[in-house]
Length: 387
Image (cartoon, rainbow, N blue to C red):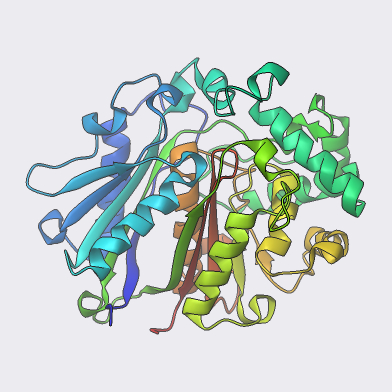
């Protein structure tokens, strides 16, 4: 049987539009040392370092990670799955622990896209070069396409997207990792300009930089430390061509098939049969409000046919589970780190260390990751109780 694993240390920098006072290595060191200090470990206790860094071109720096993350004498490798990079890095760390290769892993994810002018071009180059390039598919138009499909199929409205965005902005005001959290109402979202109908500018995530780190150890190293036990951690990838996912019987473009299957596998590992009743917190990697609503059925929080009613309860914070108490990616979305941030936030919730954004009685939580054109998906379930 593989040994249980837990997160025993979390470190985060401030997330802001641009870090002009700190270079990449300094950001990494700040997050990593905070995580190690939280865990009560030193670098000599670490058997592996995993770096989470999305495409170099987002930061405009070649081999960004090699300038900042590796340490001589400790095995190191890099992971990149777009927006799911941070959570994929955690899954890679777990594979080493479960294989018995080491007892403690430092996972670090860092983003510097605030310094680059290439980010938009990179985001707009992730689509199929044969069939999708000619219709000018972009990240924004991809989100708009899916939001439109949700509205046509299930009856969502612009007010639903605006309500979720406003709720997330209100939650972000309690998040001390954000330098300047945005605050706006649903009415202000609806008055903001359209990026691509039906996506308003205030619904879209901001550009942010920063670093996040966690220390993951085997159960034998946890001792009496305050731990977030990993009950389940799964990930899947899908075809990246949007057309291949439009109408397939196992799951259409708005069904998030890989997220659904990742969550189902993680629930099975964790022994969870009713996530809405058994989970207390969910941090969803959804940089747009419509993306968040699209994830609810995939996570088993509701049926797709009941998504509108569940979304309305979520807007009023009456869904039966705390959704994105940090404000989520709509408040801060440093691409390389954002999925690891979701895990870090859930770890702090179940450890009771989330500060002003702490959810009372949080015992179990799930964090998701979504990358590329949502072809990469992860689900990680954390608990304050050892499995």
